[in-house]
Each structure stands twice: as C-alpha cells, then as structure tokens.
Image (cartoon, rainbow, N blue to C red; front, side, top):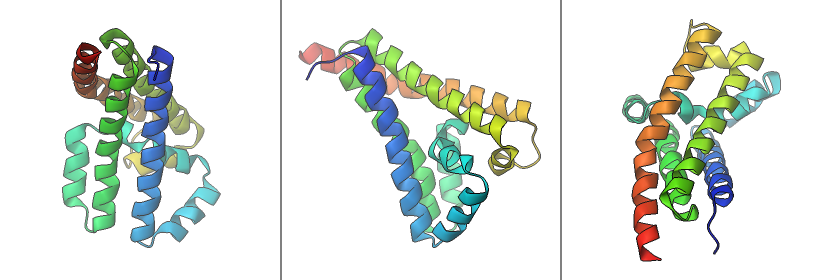
Length: 171
C-alpha cells in the first residue's frame, strides 16, 4: 500500500472519529442511557459531535482518572475508549505516513482538526460547554481544549514517531 501524508492524515482522523463514535454508542447502550442521549441530541444536535471528539479535552492521565472514578463498566469503557482511539489513530498515522516527517505532520494535522472541531462545537452551543465542565466560560473552554490538544499531539506524537521510525527502517 502506498504511503503518503494525505493518506496518513485521512486514515488517522477517520479512525479517531469512528472508534470514538463506536465506543460512545457501545458505552451508552450498555449503561441504558442511549434513550437519554437521543433526547439530548434531539435538543442539541451538536452534542453528538461533541461526544465523538470528547477525548481532545482531556490529558491521557485525566482519561484514566475519570475511568477509575466511573461507577459502571460502561462509563469506564467510555473513558478508556478516548485513550484507545488516540493510540490507534497515532499508530495508523505512523504506519501510513511513510516517513517520520509525513507521519508526524499528518498526526499534528489530525489533532488540529479535532481541536478546531471541538472549539466550533463549543462556540455553536453553550450546552456542550456546560457538559464539558460546569461553570466555565467559552474562553476557558477553548483554552482547556487548546492546551489538552497540544499536549495530546505531543504525547501521542511519540507513538507516531516510534512507529514511523521502525516502519521506515523495515522498508
């Protein structure tokens, strides 16, 4: 399979969004909250997209802390899914890029797209802002997403670097 920057970007972004979506649906179905979520989404349609990109507001250790604090297995899966989706997307970007520069560039573009999407959703509907953290302003929400997004790009970028380095040596 041919490797390129564009392919690494598109596949890593698609994998990130699809894995988040699937784990979101599975977790909420297991917790029997899917009807509640459908009602929430009918009132606030942007909320479904917000939940698909929700990991971009958390540092990796926050996802694990939230997972440990979650009461049910379903919500543990929800937060673990945020971590898993980042890892799988980083691995895909590392393999699909062809070399380290293309892979890292594609990964950073994937994270930037998630950050921008998250910020747009926060600007569209302040309900999502309140769902994110209670009592914060739009500016504070944007700052949280930017800082966590940049940290995620760098932290998971190490995985991309390692995968790209070793897959490039093998070819």
